[in-house]
Length: 342
Image 1 (spheres, one colour):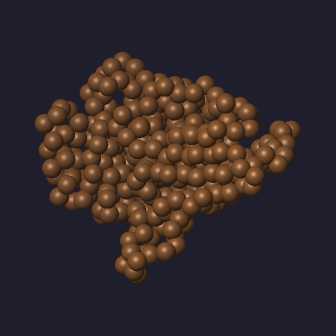
Image 2 (cartoon, one colour):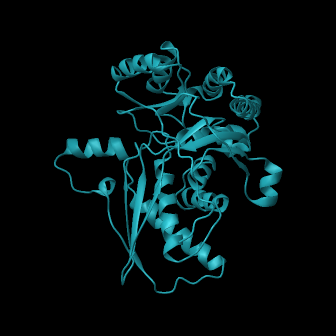
């Protein structure tokens, strides 16, 4: 039997990047793209390479293009790290996988290194596959912790819980990372919410820009730990913006949302100015010139916002295409798993 699991890209609607700093965020996953893992029983454990793991190229130019798209590290390291953390999880919870082995492979069409949580999607799908293979269950909140630990502790990737929570729950989630609650319960306060279709959302991303989130988070972490007043105040404001967006959505007061999303990005520019590249800023400027709101979906490379009607959307598509930017209407995933099981 072949086990197939999927995980989807994440878009942070509001509140990011406060998720790693005891803030509040709203995020969802959308199925325009996906990471898929296939796993089946075999005598030995084997990890198969995928497109981004290739080491043979037709020329130096081809290798250069590959590095620009995928960086220096492929997906095999993600699967190896996921397997290691899964084994440690089993051992700490009294389960012995024994000598039951598998072959695992992945494929992903999630635009890479553009703030859409493509790496955590691969790890999440791999974790789900292994839990199913061994007949184990785990609640979404704890799955998110396990995925975060894989990235942060095993791979040294500075990251927060937001991406992994949205991908584990598979529905839009309001997340409160209250410090005291997390210290006591080891998870945040997570509440599934509805994002109505009446709230017209778009996602746009550069097709020529790939950059990880490590630099932004490293700088922000240093300032946060140092108690820089502007950064601490920004975390509180991002949390407030999240609460206001949640209230506006609940009341169906969609007219209040665009300004809140715009402020989310403007605040980022105030406290993280050096980490906002000209190309990233240009995407936001194009969207706003067309009348739409705009902010990052993650740490750069892709943006999310609201638009008023199809005419505005078509205008955005035309203007974005001139700058090598792709535009989509995200199909929000609304049916989540209560737990991960066979």
